[in-house]
Amino acid sequence: MTDLATRAPRVVAPPRGRTRLSGGPRARVIVAFLTPFFLPFVLFYLVPVGYALWQSLRVVRRTGGQYGTSYTAFGGFEQYAQVIQNSEFWAGIGRIGLFGIVQVPVMLFTALIIALLLDTPLLKLKSLFRITAFMPYAVPGVIAAIMWSYLYSPQLSPVLDLLQSIGLHPDFLGPGAVLWSTANVSTWLWTGYNMLIMFSALQAIPQELYEAAKIDGASNWSIAWRIKVPIIAPSIVLTTVFSIIGTLQLYAEPAVLRQISSNISSTFTPNMLAYAVASGNNYQQAAAISVVIAVITFVLSFGFMRLTSKRAGL
Image (cartoon, rainbow, N blue to C red; front, side):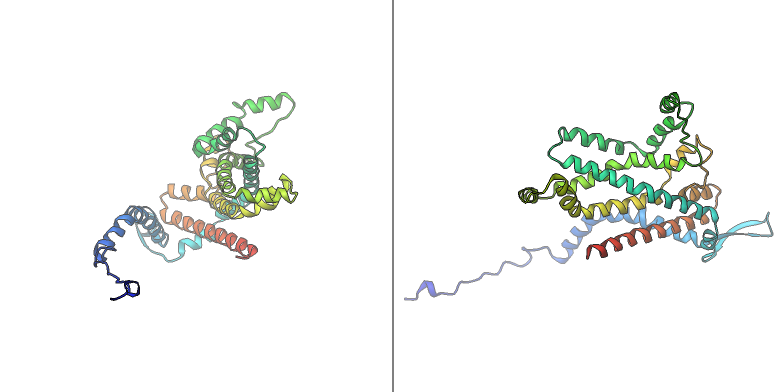
């Protein structure tokens, strides 16, 4: 009699075509899942970017002098040369650079403090404070700028009336203050958004780390700055990159405040300059300005990420 325990188990191969999709159906399933993303991505991102690049390489020429027939032709980097030589463009870049150097650290530090306060167990009514801090982000940028323009306007502002009653006469729309008035609107609008990203990262930290730190005698202050902040450093880097990109895209706030202040010109920011040039039907020059802004944004964002990665040893 054959011992059943010594028999080798018989392995039955599964029928082909039942364990996984074959090449044709599998490819169709993949295409069906990816099409809702790639189709809008191509139509509303790659195609406009490619069209802008193509327009930036063209120039408008005329036949027969100033009153001749105009036509567009390939001009190479002629439009980019004009952008590089445009003093208004570099003045806007410098203004935005100063804006970002001051506004971005202030906004992110404020967002970090609020996130740390919301994460502490000592704070009550966390949901109320979290919603209150995030609420300004729900207001569209144009509406926020209109709201603050009423507070800045000398004819309408109750804040100015109150300050003047105690002997102070600030001019929020003056030549030396209008940039910081714009920065205040951006800070009010985006602090809650950055706070939410940092707070979400704080919520992912295991509570065991805090308990171990308290057993070792760490205070709440030490836990916040020596444990929480280093762990959520990637979130801080991410919000900084978003803020750099947003700074170079600044348009809505100064464009609205320009309606009540003569100290904001149509070339106050690079984006406003591109819009002003395009409004003059010089779409090729506006495209070149937009491409240069995109390149500067990429260089600054990528450079910041590389710098922080090296410092972190990544």
